[in-house]
Length: 248
Image (cartoon, rainbow, N blue to C red; front, side, top):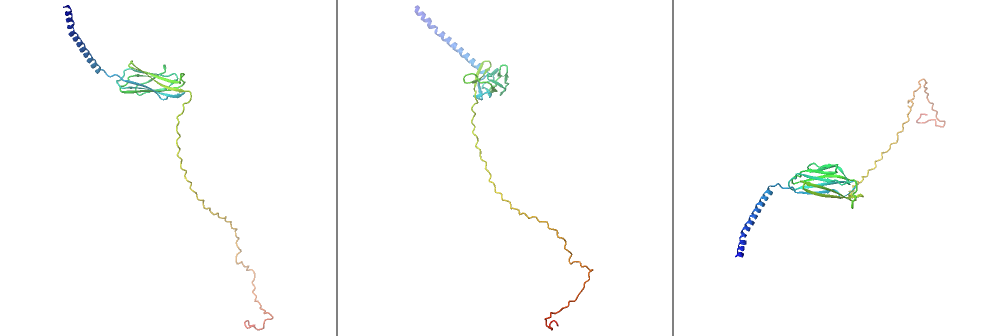
């Protein structure tokens, strides 16, 4: 009888255990539903991606390097974002830092680039600045490493690097093919006709002045007396005594 009574008591506890399990499951469903509703009404969180670039993978002293920090936010705006970029000891700041929005700055005491503020929702922030290489890094490969740290809302920390090999010799120049020159057509010279010689006229001699001729007829001297004589015809001695035509 004792053994039979114990079996009866163990069998009576099953409904109680089932009730407890069902109550716990119902409580869990209610809490889960409440948590889902709370998350639905919360504002969306910022979703950030980071990138660091440099314009040259090989350079030499004293060339310029241009760095870019690119932060893309595909979610909500941030409330407290701090961006720090520490300059490498082998470079000096070139004097200018820009950003697509907000106000970047340069801290000469710590030699670092900075930006602090709120990242706009669905936006891309680009911070740019330039440095001058002044020394060759004393490490294997002469690699100049520049890094930045971004702290968003005091919790999200991201670090990115950009590397440049600093060469001790002049980098190999990029080959630029010489443009092919187009020959310029040389115009054919047109033969110029020889000028017709102009005959040279002999110089005209100055005529010799002709003296005035003596007045012709000459002026007669009227002071002379003109004497008229009658010629005496004397026939030759051998002519005949009578001539028919002459009357001799």
